[in-house]
Image 1 (cartoon, rainbow, N blue to C red):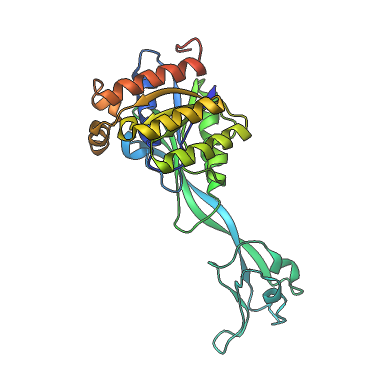
Image 2 (cartoon, one colour):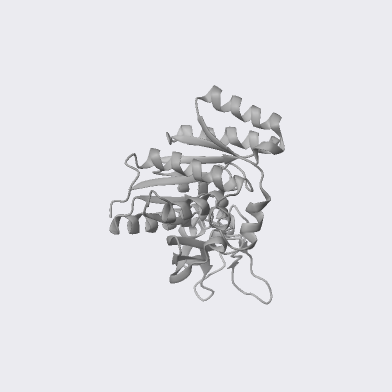
Length: 306
């Protein structure tokens, strides 16, 4: 079982369009590769908008914890207020005789718990989101929703990936296709951890070139083999040439270029991968060639093990 992660360094480059196309081509293409899908962009999951999965399981995700003060045990010593570096402890007032904690300001460090001589403070886990196991037309899909203003998205990404990987192992699937989050932070590191191959989607813009360098530094640091795909290559030829120069300088293979194609947007509006919506479109032909190249690296035999 191989893990393929699709990254970008920035949002809006076309990761989800690429992931949806890969899911379709793996399922319906001539290689007949069995794949489990994972949407690791838990802060703004949107792969389900294209795949229209049916939810089979729903699970709560427990993120961090917040401090809670028992008003009956609190003696008002103020140690918790002094220990808190986030100004989350609210001192007593006329209407509130005991100390309290602002759950939004609390960072969950538990410093106040250890400083309370009365043991009046405890940490209470918070439900930060939900994760799902679904069945799509192109195979099983694991995805999640992180509630607004919640943290620990890296932990939720790991949870989604772990369940996708376990199902792939249990069902003898060949590939886990991970639609990664944008950027280079904790969620990206969690999505890329253990990957056998990273496909980095970039675009010929100033931001795209800048963030391509950052994500390549990330994959190099974690020793993840990476391939680069340039999306909307014809909108800014000078930027495309700069991307080619960067890849040549860093020794990273640029496997293909996808032309700007309004069909991609039309396919998204119709809830279809562009390769399924219009296989003869220029973008579809480019995506099919990219998938063949990626699949050959992941599974040299290129066929089903069923």
